[in-house]
Length: 185
Image (cartoon, rainbow, N blue to C red; front, side, top):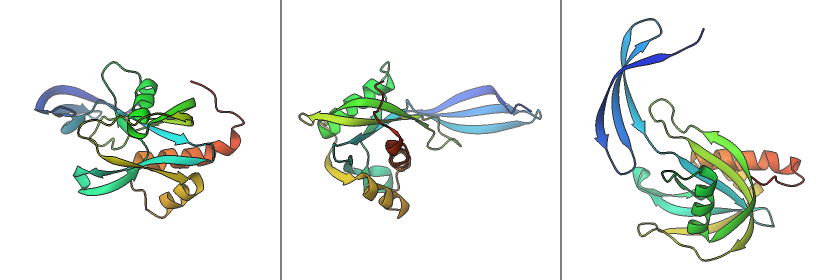
């Protein structure tokens, strides 16, 4: 059986700088009608950037929705018309000053599919060199290096609650030993 929901009507509730909130009426596969609230988001990108010593670059920054400082892998929202890999390279440089090489995809992450259409593209790279950090005007963060195995322990101990960071750290730890050389995207 193919599952589906057909959109009957859609009303925009809120249009912000980053998100749009929609209130949709749908027809279910059994013919009944239901309402769906959907957050439309342009998507994001996250980069697990490894040093030559297998340390990951992390950023520590205040995250307003949680009212706390989080430790995360470098990431950002997708810019309109830019491909995810190029966006990830830009975010990595802006937030950490790092320039990566040998990028490979770690897949896509749907952070909260029950109500949000955001897709986060995950990448792994080796760091080639460092240049200057170039933070946005409203961006304040600290860069930290954490050995990959320590980062895995931090995920398992609940010290890294961010979903994209958890996923990219664990995928990196599982894939890295099997790679003789990372393919270039």
